[in-house]
Length: 353
Image (cartoon, rainbow, N blue to C red; front, side):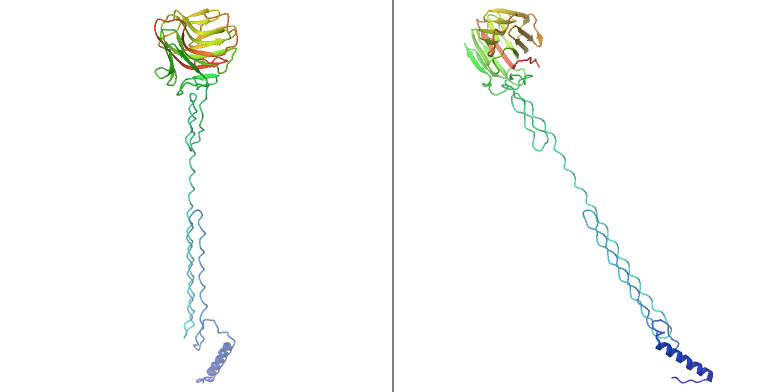
């Protein structure tokens, strides 16, 4: 124990104080207070500063690219201990660590573009006996075939039993049989045509003879509707026949002329003639229609019925064929020509369109 100099009361107070300090130290009252005692003992250091919190990473951005991760917050620095020596200075607290930055969100990927749909293909063109053209690949349009007529898709008669516009490379032998005699010729030609690019062309000298196409397709028939587009460069004179149907023991000549230019109907067996006031024109196309039953014959010129042709008789039996062409039973005044196009034969009227 230290010595005491001074008055007795001072020395007693000094001894009591020292005893109190000693007792308090033994009981731990001065630990971790950061306050120095009066005798100048060094104070213990203050508590360390709390560590900074770690920054949370960002969530991954929606869409195609991922967001960048957030940076980790730096840890807080540890507070310095109290200075040893006189004075109970409190140690400074550690600084709080800065929070990590939040990662930026990823950009959303753009949606893929929808492929454009294919275009509708055009239907195939209605051929004249030929299939329609096929739609180009990749397009939605369905390729439509042309309506196949009997011997070709003739103008306005696709549903008829015989329908031919003579646009094929050759005359359809599955429908027509050709016959020529006396120097007459018959062939496909491109010099004249009603539709398309071709027709049948017949050259007839002045002498008797014939050049014809004949069909039995769809026959025998008790009633016939026929249609043909015709063009003539023919002379008058003699007896000339252009369209007919054979019947057992007879022939119904639905386009005939004798001597003049008028349109006539002639029955072979009875040799009767029925003439119209309308003449067969030269150098121009015209539509000719005929209707034959067992009781009468009707004739239409360019869609107009020729009422003056009204025989009281018709086919005496079923008709076995149809004949179109140029035949002279008597010599004519000069050579002639004839073109035939867009022929149709049916059981109902076809019309000129």
